[in-house]
Amino acid sequence: MVGGDHGHLRFSLRSVEALIRAAIAQVPGTKSIDAKLAGIGGRAYPRLLVQIDPERELVSVDANIAATWPSPVTEVAVAARGAIEAAVREYMGYFTSRVNITVGALEPGPRVSEDDVAKRGHPSGTHPQELSAHEPRHILAPHPKALRPTLAPRPDRTLREVSTPKHVTAPPIAVPAPMILRATQAPAPLDLKEIASPAPQPLRSIAPPRVDVETSPVLTPPPMSLRPVSVPRAVRLRRVYIDPVPRHTAHVYAPLPEPLRAITINPRWKAGTPLV
Image (cartoon, rainbow, N blue to C red):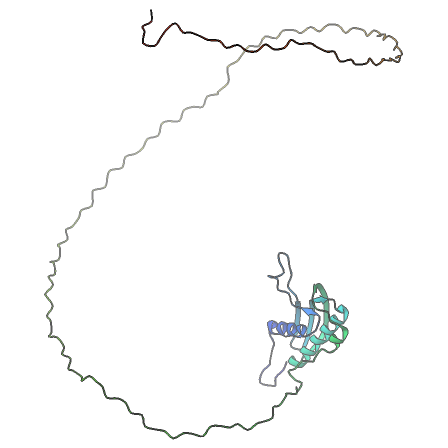
């Protein structure tokens, strides 16, 4: 925007984007989403593509916004376009060549009606606003009181003189005599000797040892002619009848068990007697 013959005024891209974001936020039914809070793969809204022509004082805007649901999405997009055009005209003095609005996401939120979108306010920077005034009221202040002198009490203890100690002389510090540095001689360099490499040897071929393999002829029998194979005719199956046999339980007689008898064992060797 030209500001006279002494200079010109230009708007940075960030300032215009901030102005457009603020205008979109004033429209009921729009929502700002941060990319960090949207999760992995989420997008931030609103996303803007702004182009500025300071020579002709024109601004073109491509805005991708997020709307809340339930709300009249079409009316919200139209109101967002009008808010952007009004903000650019009121705050910058520029005109808009185009304003494209795309609703890229719907987020759950409070219900917004068409009346709420229609009651959207205009930019408050250049329009007067009515302020509520308060009626003045009488304030009662207390009467000032006469000052009275303040009496400080006398000190109970008398001050006494503080004497400083006599000057104490510091004992002398003996400094050691400086050490005499002696010259060091570097060792004489060693004589380098030439390293002789062996004469190259002629290359010789390396071949695996030859192994004589004896081959023996393999004789195969002559092919035999096929002969027909006769299979006996299948016999027709006949039905088999099985007569059920009644099961009779056989009684088995077992002798009664005899009672156990006590057995007494008398050992022949007693403890303490030698074995023979």
